[in-house]
Picture 1 (cartoon, rainbow, N blue to C red):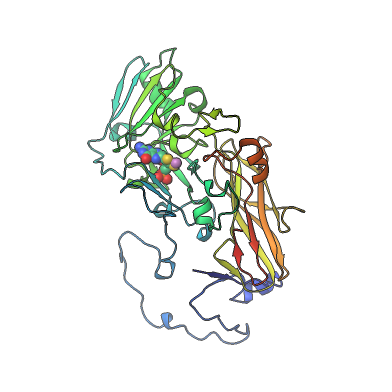
Picture 2 (cartoon, rainbow, N blue to C red):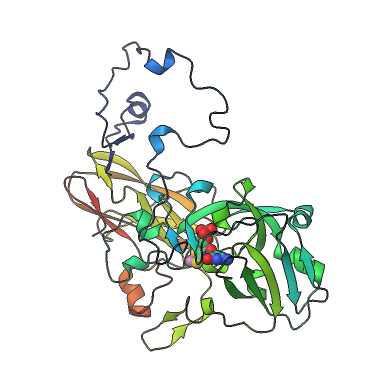
Length: 417
Ligand SMILES: Nc1nc2c(c(=O)[nH]1)N[C@H]1C(S)=C(S)[C@@H](COP(=O)(O)O)O[C@H]1N2
Ligand SMILES: [Mo]
């Protein structure tokens, strides 16, 4: 479905007076005739009768005109329950992903776990192994932090060149929530640590028993064992009743339905860190334990599926993030990278979180190429696809973070070409 974007805001005053300015119209509805600011406002039909009652429904849902803003799967799953669905980034605002739109990636479907029966075991190279219930964990001091979550397979579609896909399918294995739980280090204070403990194995309670080894010194400061996202308990598909959040690390390490943490002196070499989640380099060696997601950005509006209907001003909007810290800056180019201008970061700018940016742009009605690049607080600059391919070759699947270009045609259509 094409969504039309009307520009042409002449001034701040006009922006407040003209209802069509900067507004999105769906392809299906008629354009709104401009109203004179001096004419009396006729009563709209919905002002003439009471609306629907309270508690309809008791758990609120998006309104009837927002039914298109949903997760979608780019591909049918290889097996029932496995696969992934993507977040509709083009239709979101700010930097938080609503719980019902957080992308999903399951290796063996979503288990139905009774929280009263769920246990978290912490064992291995600890002084005193412990078993925690969810109620035990709720008694510990809690922490809440906003962090992005990105599958390391996100944007793999673009390694070999523009895929033609819209942003939901190129970048939608990406979400950002406020996560609430207990610091991993708090639980390790409870068990005590053997001096030889250097790695921690995290295991999920799903049919895949997904397991990853994580280097303790690199995660101890920030890793969280969480039971809530965006103010409510985790959704089943995102790990209910307990998951690991390892800020900035590839999505796979954020083990859902967490049931076991084993302290070890060396990595376990599980399937997900040997056969999968490694990257083959041009020299035939594979990169292993590539944990941090490199800095990346993408323009979400306008993006493929949108159509520009008017020449003039547009606020080009997008998201930037880095697995190594805060976003320092974002630049936007409308001429294929010949010139760049600084975008505004629309705060708050959190550590290892999605950061909204906006850039002022005037569309002259001709063809254009929009792209963004970000710089994180370590000084790392998001590379072009060409630079990334020169460094990593074309055998990699994971950790693609190249600059994303969107072509604007003279008819206003936006394409990934
Ligand atoms: N137990 C378990 N944990 C898991 C997975 C899984 O299949 N099982 N998928 C992983 C992958 S590959 C990703 S990208 C993230 C996805 O988290 P989400 O579904 O909450 O977005 O969870 C990770 N944790
Ligand atoms: Mo993933």
